[in-house]
Each structure stands twice: as structure tokens, then as C-alpha cells.
Length: 510
Image (cartoon, rainbow, N blue to C red):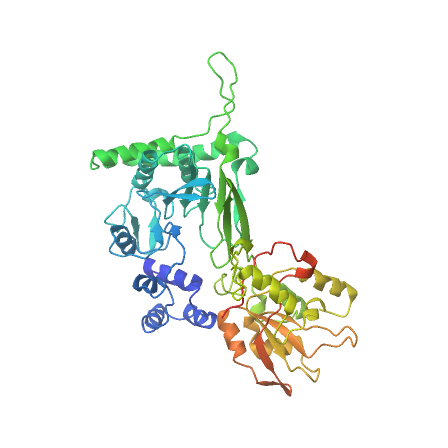
């Protein structure tokens, strides 16, 4: 398979713009048919919404600072850098650009470096005509870029600033990036990678037995780079100009930046204190895929706090396997298989909202007001008591109460009209398509111990959610169904107390 086809298959597998049923068809189709499908669907951006942002049809409501990833287009990045392409509020962090943000009493200095760290391509610019390196759908970092980032950082150095290094690859996996963060005197690093389901926050002191373990990992990175450099040094130095030679010297300084060894001794035999400050004070944030979660840094009165949210793995298929040991349907797949892990049985984690952002206008409540008011007043056809009545047994009743504090799916629907008591959970799943249903909750009447005349169903994604709503009025086992958006709330506000600060809330999709 050609590099272009591999990249296209990868984009299809993980694009959040492709509905699941179309993704399955594309994954099983020949590549020429896949290309025709994408090219003949101009109104459906299966791979990218970038043209909509470029035309102004869509926009970023807040400033966005980012690096490029590993699967990008070199030509587009070069046009963004040159100014041929302009997207308001989009700021690309690269080796030649730095941004200063004054937030919450802290001056945040942002540096960035995009692309993968591929050892044998550190001196290869690929198809790029500028310093951006890449080709065939792959982007990578070069030694010249690292050297120029060092030069940029030295020009703007201010000891009163807090430095954040943003990279695509993780310094925890790439020793060269860990050395770069040391050289830049970074206070935080933020990285991504591909297809992580959980956010990670760590520093080396929390992970390594002692500083020399940390040092040994960076020594290995240093040796790998120097072996490559020794092999091509004569060839490289023969064609670079004076400025490029200076940038390469900067990169070599980064490669030689190692934490001191605790076993070193002075000439007089004494063992001085050689602790690396960054060993304990440099914190690293590794992000999950955007569709799976987020990390928020809360900068307030000089303090930098962190809040994380991630969807994680979906193990609901195991419950289905236990209930139906002979079941060979798609529910039996492992959480690593199937269609895109971002969409296989996904519910999107709610975006972070804070009560301090709520609207002062009582006629237009903000997210915090919505969370509090809806949980008190209910609304629609839902019954607030249903939230805690999940089964007949007391143990399951307690379990249901414990689950009441968990975040519910933003794609939950209310199904009413189940009047004859003949509809089971499996009937509900089959009615809406088992592949798109992630949970069914059938409340029990505490007096009769029988199922109530309605239930709640969590759908997999916006596509299946809208398809489920479209079935309103259809008949299931002689029951005419009433299907609407669920107004169940995610938290029991009465238990929290009316004056307690609200937690994260995401309104249901419009």
C-alpha cells in the first residue's frame, strides 16, 4: 500500500466527521472506491473542516494556539506561515514563533514544535520548501527546527515568565524532546501523540527511582543522535550556510544537555549537590484524543491548577458477553478493535464549564445556572425519581443511587408509551440498532416492583441520536412510542447543597 493510501486509511479510521455506518463501508471498500466516495461528497467534509474555517463559514470563538501533528499537509502549513492562508484566532506554534499570554497573574511564554521525532529524518526536509518538514501525509521534526527554536527562546528569554513547551510527540517517549525542555528551562510541557484514551500528568521524580535513571534514558537519546550525526556530519557541514551551522550547534547543545550524575565527585573527593531542578519541578501533560477528553489548566492568582476529563475505554461489550455467552455480534469485539476507537461506542466527554462564566442575565442562564435549575425543576416527560430506581433489589437500588452522580450521555433519549409491560431491554436495543445503543435504563416502580411505562436510552453519537429521535410515533409490540430528548440531569444537586459550586455540565446537543 502506498504512503498516501496508508494515510488516507488512517484518516478514515479516526476522522470524527465520518458517521459510523459510512466508516464501516469505507473500511471494507477498495481504495479507488473510497477516493470516489470522498471526492463526490463535497457537501459532507469527511476528512477536514479546514475549508469552512478558511472561508469564514466557521470560526474559532477564542484564540487557539497549537502545533501541527503527524498527519498534515506541508503545503497548507507553509501557506499559513506565509500569510497566504489566514484563519482568525488560529495561531500556529513553531520554531520561529513564540507567544506571551498574561493570564491569572502569570506570564505564560508558549513555544511549540510539531511533527513526529523520527531519528533518520532529523536531517531530511522532505517535500517542504520552507523549514517545515514532511511528505506523503507524514510530518516530522528536523535538527534545524530544534536549533531555531533554541535561538527564538534565547531572544525572548525573561526569568519572570513561566515557560510552556508544546509538542506533538511526548517528551516521556522521546528523549530528545525531554532534553529540549531542559535546555529551554520549561516549567511545563504539553504533548499529544495519537489515540490515547486518558490524559496523563507526571514529572520524572514521580516516575523514576532517582535522577540517574532519568539521566540514563537521556544518555541513550544522546548516543542515538550522535551516531547519526557522526555518520553524516561531513556531508551536512559541506552544504549548510553559516546561519544553519549555528542552528546545528544549538541542536548539539540540546543533545548534550544532560542532568548531572549524582555519583559525580569534585576534584577534592567531595560529593556536591547535583540535583536537577527540573527533575522535581518540570511537569508534563500528555493529552488524549480531543474527541475522548481534555486537560484544562486553571491559572488563577499565580497558581496553575489542572483538571482532566477522559472517556476512557468502553467495556460495555463484556456485559453483553456475560448476558449472552453465545452472542457473536459486534458487541463481542475488544475495545481496541472495530471502527474508530474515538467513535466505536463513544459518548463525548462534556466540555469544561465553570460557574464563574455563567450569564448574569436571569433570562439567559449560563451553564452553571442550567445545571442547577434543570436538576430542581425536571422537565419534559422525565421523572426525577427514575434516576435512582434502577432495579428491584436494595443492592441494585444503592448501586443506582451511586451511579446518579455520574455524568450521563449527552445523547440520551426518553422513550415513553411502554404501556403493556411486554417490552424488554433487548427489544429496545433491537429497535434502535444494538450497534448504536450504549446503555438502556428501565426504571422500576418501587410499589408494584414492575417496569414503568418509559425508559432511557443512551445513543452512541450525534448521528444515531438524531436517527433515534426520528422514530418518534413508531410502534413496538403494540406500543406507540413517544421519543424525545432526555432531560435527566447528571448530578443530584440536592445532595450537593444549593450553595455548592456546580461541576462541569454540557447542555444536550441542539
